[in-house]
Image (cartoon, rainbow, N blue to C red; front, side, top):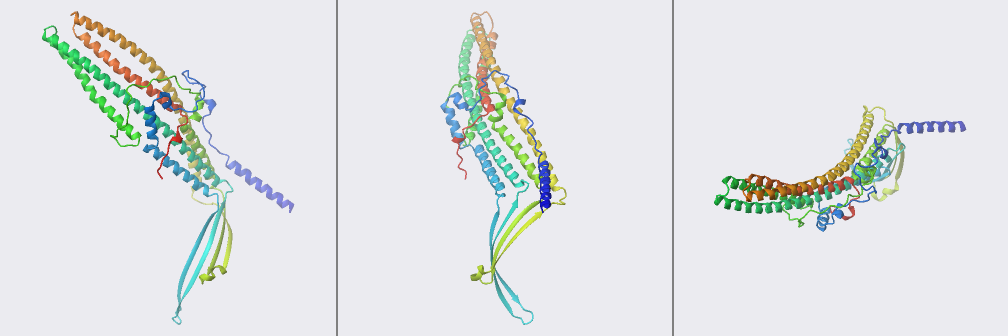
Length: 469
């Protein structure tokens, strides 16, 4: 007897060792924190960032109100929330398989029988009620792996929602900056139009006195008409931006969204960016990609376990009688265990395992790609903002020099020392630079917004409420 017990232990230990070897495969992440650069190429504060909210960086109540208005009404964000609801339900469905199922049935029946010998017929009542339960023993951890995979997919979907929330805030901020810059350009064009119209009147007056030729009039008139032709495009772009902002706020186009600010906000110091490895924990899209990789590994486990035998326990109890008043006088109980061993399935289970393995490798590659893209986004925005500041300073110096050249050209023209062409050339240069400076300053702020988005952080989820169910 003792020898049989030892043999059985040996057999069980052998099966468990084989099972551990069979399930040991796991697709690893192709990148680790120590594989990333130790610092960014731009010297930035290295404190670990906790939360990024560029609305606080700009300290503008108007922008804060726009974002607060959009958080609960944006339709794309609400759509992302429905995916969370679905993923949570799917995780609950997968987890329900770990518990026994229990169902009840009531089956009243009426049977008519007729004898071919004497031609008599009779009706027979048949009443039955019962309970049935079944439970699959999760010997290989298949059901547990399926539940864990669904839970990880749910967490990934929740992180997708955070990514969408960060993107929404950044898109609203970008649109807000675009509207302000378009209005500043329109105001500048109106001033330039007024100035050039005044000079056109002066040139015409000099032409009437025979002091200049008609060419000077035509050249100055061309400048006026050039500015007038740009105004409709500026107004159209502002209207498009306002329609886009309305969509972000969950409103139809043509809805008036209040934007009253007349000047671009000023930028402070660069935010604390930490080190590149901090992105692994600060970027919700990276964490979502990691969770999906882990979910794929759990699905691979479940696919492998599906190739092995499974044991299902069933229990049923029935009450049956031809008189409903005595239904519970007769009953029987059935207990059974089913062992299902896959033998031939046309290679379906093996193909499912290969498919799950391929998905895990794909998500491993996606994880590396997501991390590298995140690093690139931060590096790009840091470099772009730094060089944009240098570019703006150079533009301002160029504009100052061009203004001096314009003043000199006008003085020489008024004294009759040169024709109108130098005045025209310098006027166009100065006015072009004035417009460029506004556009470049707006672009610099866009880079800062993109930097905040690239650094990730914790979005204000507690301020969001979707009443969709």
